[in-house]
Image (cartoon, rainbow, N blue to C red; front, side, top):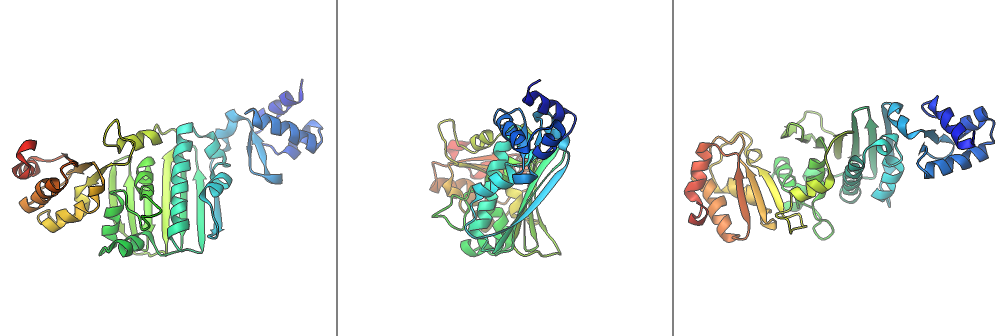
Amino acid sequence: MDTKQKIADFLRGKKRATSTEIARDLNFSRQYASQVLHGMALAGQVKKFGSTRGAFYVLPERVDELGPAASRRRLRNRNLKEHEVFERFVAASPAFQAAPENIRGILSYAFSEMLNNAIEHSQSLFIEVHLESDLHTIRFQVSDFGVGVFRNVMKQRGLKSELEAMQDLLKGKVTTDPKAHTGEGIFFTSKAGDRFLLESFGYRMVVDNLLPDVFFQQEKRVNRGTRVTFAIARKSPRRLNDLFKEYQSGPGSYAFDKTEVHVRLFTMGTIYVSRSQARRILVGLEKFKKIILDFERVPNIGQAFADEIFRVFQSRHPNISIVPLNMNETVRFMVQRVEKPSRQ
């Protein structure tokens, strides 16, 4: 029996083992065991987790048996590079390596985008990253102790409240640094997983893609800075490319030029009557070629509200397609009253 087969048989009897344990039990030198294990890892015959003397090895078919795991790091925000942190902290984890390709792609994108936001926008001296997994779900958190995402958006965009900041972030293409960023990170990350939470200074935005629904909440406990929580099922069928395609206006478009706005999130208990309410919804939407307006759970709208969107804005931007969805009969009647004849 050759050495590789002996190591494989040994690992079948254990969930995991270090090179020292393998060398001792099989009567090899640790240096020789490490050399053979290195070759087996390159060939995909074993999985290596960790580094230096803390590294351990697992057969690929037994990675899922490692069970729940969690790790946390506190990083000084000085010359941090998100891809390097990802490689050391996420990509090296058993949960990530055992995940299907589509999940690895989503985690790579989401973690890198959220960490980059903290590095470049938070003005925080330290950033904490947390990764945990169980048999069903992989989740991560990125936390900073800086200016706060909602307050930062409010300041840079001249908004009146954290609520308005949350509303704008869900439109997409919202950034506090337009020269260096596209503003796509939070938008796509919030839609890429099963559940996304964005918390800052007592305000919380929850995007639950399993329901699906969006919630804005205010908490009594106020934590400084921003915390992002992202969760996705290990066996989720979600794919990043499918998500990007969903927000392209057509087959020939490769740009993020389509967005979806949940109208009910712009009133929070009031009725939809005025032009000012409509203008609040429309801020920034001129950047898109196609706008989906979702009227689910909107009981009624006023004529001025409908006129501002479906006549005034549409006439100013004739090349933008506005598609209303989930209208009840009352809302549909008001929209049809003000639409241009060519759309009736």
